[in-house]
Image (cartoon, rainbow, N blue to C red; front, top):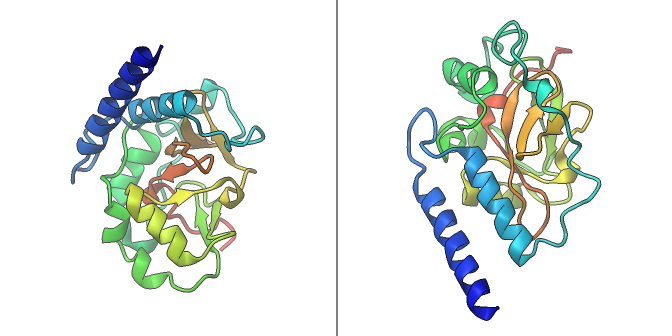
Length: 209
């Protein structure tokens, strides 16, 4: 039994290492984010992430990402996105993508860190619909939110920072909006659910503005 457990640990650890080393500065990550999510979830099931909430995430069926008027959404992303996010990249990731991500660290190349300071929660809106999807930081400081996001390469949100009116997850860990926008993936860790989200997917302006 000990030999089996050590073999399983070695296999999962190797898979995770290969996944993390595959990311690079390209429009899309070269490694499938869904494959990374599967490996991460396998690791947690085997070696414990016992604090994962049973209430969240709120799940959706695969049909939520069916083809619509513009990819998986009814319309393209907004023309003027916040934080100087690239419109073409955003539209591709939000509406014509199920597995890939903006390159790791992309969010740090935008104006986000320069323009968002202090500990007041920031509203993150769907880049297509303008619906409020995330509000962070909540229950931690801005420095803590930034530190965790930098360590993973993408803005990383916790359950209490998700506006569940419009955010859902699929069985494979893909995180989406209820209107069909691809957002990222849920990659749980020892602290619970962690929603690893493309900044270009949540750089929209409020629909109420």
